[in-house]
Length: 113
Image (cartoon, rainbow, N blue to C red; front, side, top):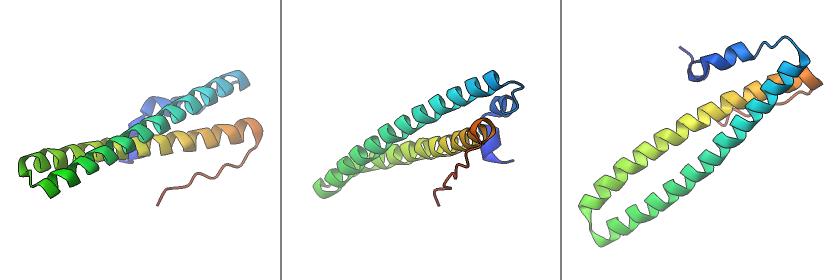
């Protein structure tokens, strides 16, 4: 199963609004969700940097027990951030499609690879 479509199955239904007003409302909602996801990604990136700094300090000071806990936190925060990346990418594609439908704009969504 494709992870992009499995993230928000209810959004697939919203991709086929019948009127201009519904399409515009869906676009505005999708843009809001995309911006919120981007904000969360920035917060998670900051958390990752903080955890990495603490990990390096624990490594230089020889605190092995702290290093283990920090590695676990790193793995969890990276996993959450990666899911937000996938969600934001799906929202970006949805916004591009809706902008094309409404305004005829051609928006290229970078895959991030």
